Amino acid sequence: MAEIRHLVQSANAGRDVRSMSAGPTVLFQGDSITDAGRDRANYYANSGPGMGSGYVRHVVTQLLGKSPDEGYRFYNRGISGNKVHQLADRWVDDCLNLKPDVLSILIGVNDFWHTLGGAYDGTVELYDADYRQLLDRTLEDLPEVALIIGEPFAVQGGSAIDDRWVSFHAYRRAARRIAEDYGAVFVPYHKIFAAALQQAPADYWCPDGVHPSMAGCYLMKEAWLAGFDEL
Image (cartoon, rainbow, N blue to C red; front, side, top):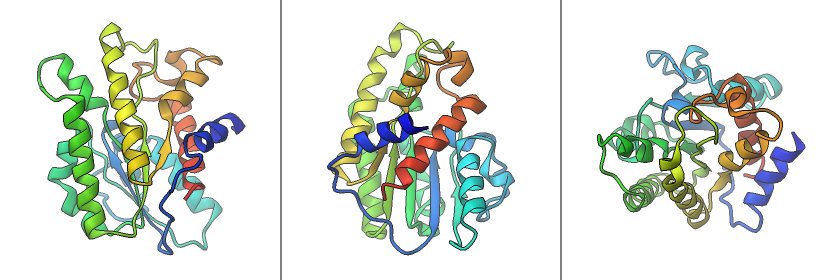
């Protein structure tokens, strides 16, 4: 979609973005949106069951199918329910040891959502600090890695989204500032879903406002690929 590509390009206009190195290893990290029911026993590169059923699978099938000569190696290490500090707990095995050339992270919804039920006492300040610490650690080990940071999103009209989610927008803004500060490509998923609501309601794109439908995964795939083209 031309509109999606325009939104992604606008989000990255004038940025000093890290360039992708020659290697083709791409790692997806995040929570349930990235996990999407993947078979964690199939952790090898380009494993179909290991990609899950979400936007990652859409991205991988398109790039593998269109570019067989590139030798891409894709890994999905998203885990449902994760917050930033839980990424950090498993970062050696699930990121640093894989030595990705491109690292794509979508994280933040649980850092907010889990505070609503009292099970987690995190704040946006903690989210920001944890995220920056994670990236500092990554760049110390992998100084040439190209970064893609996805905007955490909450689709208005989704069944899980209520008035309390107004505080969530601070997490979105934090993710964007982090992307700017670390020279990452920023994928504005929240803005893309908001634009899509002009065509169809939330239950078409993302029924609970957090986990995308197949149509929503398509939007995310298009947005991610537009971001990938910015590297």
